[in-house]
Image 1 (cartoon, protein in one colour):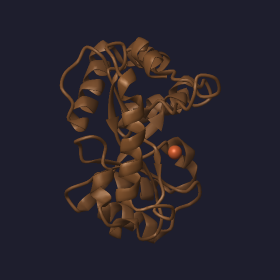
Image 2: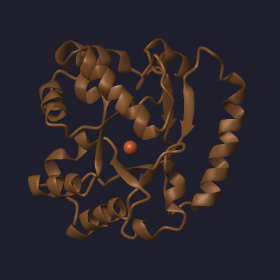
Image 3: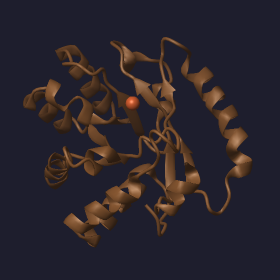
Image 4: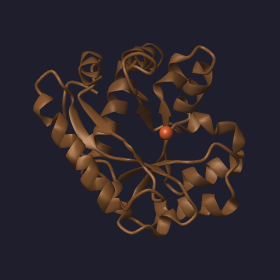
Length: 212
Ligand SMILES: [Fe+2]
């Protein structure tokens, strides 16, 4: 998958294994993640994107009080990827996300929001955005002909901030970011695409590269 991502123009990948507080502590998770990273390290070569270690944190009531929550941010950044339940979120859940976003040392990114779009009110999305919460969608939201128009409409409104490959393997969910990049370049222009990816690098605190 990493080699394929490199051929698709990806220079840096954020690995986002699931973190669930009901299963393990943040420190145990980080140790387990480190051990897995050490296993793939010998294979990280020139034709492989840089890999940053992150997490996809499952939301639960009380997540804002989780000890060491900030250690789950991606790489050296302040970006914390949170996965919400696929249903209408309660007032207190929305408030809790806004509270994490407002604490100053963490920038919340909500994962694959295309899955939850229609469950939440416009007002809920507005409040999250106004609190500085950033939004991620999977590449398939752009690549699928059914949702492409919606994806570009949101991109133009500046309410989509990150793209996820959602790749899990080479067969059922392979990396398909090249298709997304070329769609964005075609519709929005080369300058937009390079600004978009430059923004990602800045938010992830990675140095300049020729790739996304
Ligand atoms: Fe997810």
